[in-house]
Amino acid sequence: MTSPPEFKRRPATALMAMANALSMGDEIPGADLTRIIQAVVSSRAERAALLAAVRAANDPDSGLTVADLLSAFAAESGAAEAQDRDADQVIGQWAQRLAAGALLASFGAAIAGTVTGGPAFGLTLLSFSGFIFSTVSRLGGRARMRLKAQEREAAESLARHVLEAAKSGGGED
Image 1 (cartoon, one colour):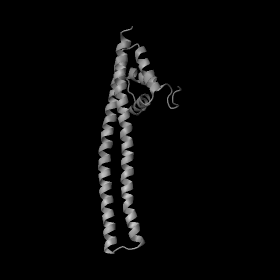
Image 2: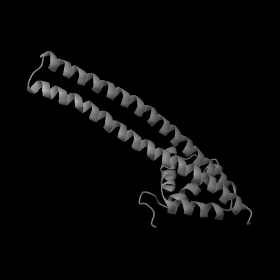
Image 3: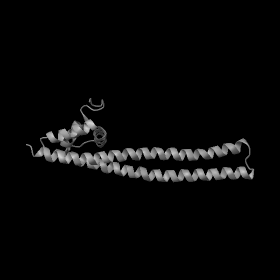
Image 4: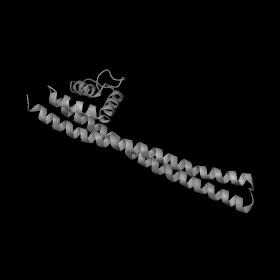
């Protein structure tokens, strides 16, 4: 598999290089590190390449550093997932209440005769659009939550495998 064009090397190799740089005290840009970890976590080939790189590493501590980076990424993804879940509940409840209130107001205006004919129908349709907005916003939030949950689970699993690879790689020297 060829590497994505935005990386000069394979993301797995770049992650190992960043882990080695961190262990030497170098500063690493957080945004680049996050992008690289996302690329590794989202690709089977990159996960396999990372495990092979950890096993072949000369420094057994680099595997521990990579596992720590993956665990930190998993924690951040879990926090983002919880934040998306909270936002989904708040937005969903707010939109549903607003739509229900608008629907009741439009029905009340139509029944009372305040608004009649086409405007009454239009007002009722407008209030239904609130329900559509609420449904669409919740679907988008759930898709983000699902993506963050998958990233978190993959990073946690990969961190465990990296620790195992570091243990098996370190004893073969």
